[in-house]
Image 1: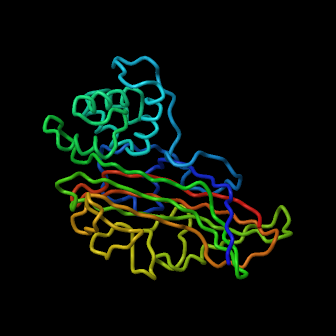
Image 2: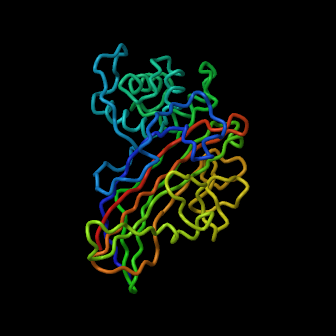
Image 3: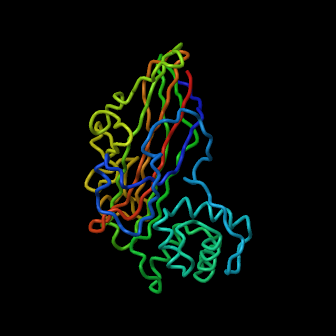
Length: 327
């Protein structure tokens, strides 16, 4: 019987550059409305320290200005919750579309003004007033003929769970992270959109008793179910999937799996026309024979994108799962 314990997880949300010449993936067609920061840190692997970050709400909240022109109809606690929720649900390009539709300042950031504007829209349209632009508000906006330029308004959340699980038993250890992806596509033409997920990383081992100058040993070759037979090194993002299941994330022409599927509004599987994508991943190593004193360093990088059949990439998220621990 295996026992389980949680190790400290280090997660970051970084919007990296698309100009990295070493990564041919970034030569795909881009929607000019995307907001992309030039952050080269995402494409390097140097940090082996452990940094604590909050779980979920994939990113760091920006400090909000207190002065806004819109009169609040929700209280400060609700506003703070709405800011966090809306950031979790809308990438920057989609936040701009939401703000444009609401007729407010287009910052691409989840802020106080946006939360209050959402609350007013909800109040006007008979939706529960909380400032959170969730699925009901999302559907109402798409059905609202007075709001234009919303074709690529998409709900796109990534929830990285708090901890890498070490499950031991039978002389082996499983070292696994865990995250969920949920995407709500524009109703009416959902089949024009597909999700794709990409991965690269470094997973390394320092043997027990090693000196301070001993280099870490790469374990990327243990990821044999990855397309290509191993975990691609940073920064060479490859499409993520599982060769034993003949599966890559988000491909509508592939059979639905519990952790990789399109569904309709009632929760029934609909690979061809489903407007909701749900993905789940447990990245890591299964069945590792470990020794006391070994140090493991996980640095797994992910990029998820929603692609339109003619406009290319229209929404994206970047996240990682990092952890350093001693057996």
